[in-house]
Length: 110
Image 1 (cartoon, helix red, strand yellow):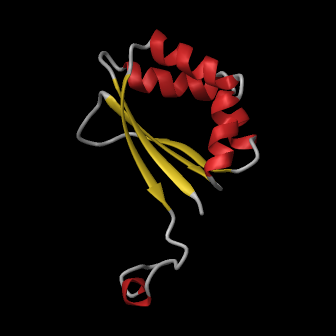
Image 2 (cartoon, rainbow, N blue to C red):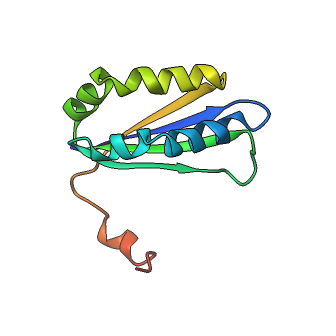
């Protein structure tokens, strides 16, 4: 059962975006994406809030997240969050193994 975590990083003076840019430029994002069990690790920028960055972080299962949280790169992530003085709001979702209902598929253009 996949687990997806939406993390909203908020700061001031563009710090959330600077954080995301440094996560990418430092190679941390590539390292996370290479971890066993990582399904998605991508940043998005809300159109109506320039001081927030959304991270969509998806994992194969809880064990994969636990291994990620125990990895040395977590210290790097925490240090960058502190460097940019970011605050977080977190939403957690568990995948629906049944998938998208047929009735909903009529609204999806692939």
